[in-house]
Amino acid sequence: MTTLWSDKDWKVILEPASLPDGREKKVVRVERPDSAHIIAFTESGNILVLREYRPYYSTYIWMIPSGRVDKEKDSLEAAKRELREETGYRADKMEYYCTTHYSESVIAANHIYIASDLHEDPLPSDDDEEIEVHELPIEEALNNILESEYVHTASAYALLRYLRNNQK
Image (cartoon, rainbow, N blue to C red; front, side):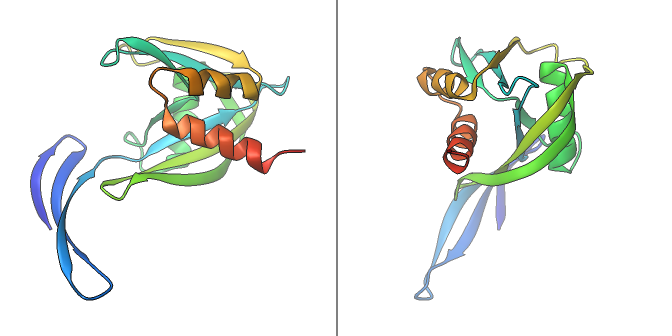
């Protein structure tokens, strides 16, 4: 493995990859911190969803509370922090749900959690974010996410998988 570039928590590496027939190819991969994403259920059965301004898109996108696992190494602790920073709520119950990956060329995972038993307990939010918190039925939240000009794919996947697995 050769590091081509590195800054802060990101790296671009050139790495060998073996094929089933024994041949080897070299692949450029990006390494970045994992992310934590939270499906946070309110007492009424709705979920908390964010409408966040993304400056490089010059528009707002819809997403579930999400953030990088960078201030701590444990994704559950990051999920708890992100929920409090972005929504102002603490979850008495936070359970691991699933993990997804961006692609083979991006070395990072999306850890998805289910939160419930929410109580107001805010942490200071990042001063460089513009976030609105909304409480919506899960189907409406998913619809807003999927209709965003730029879809937050981890949020879309999390809600689609949750709805598929919990159909009645």
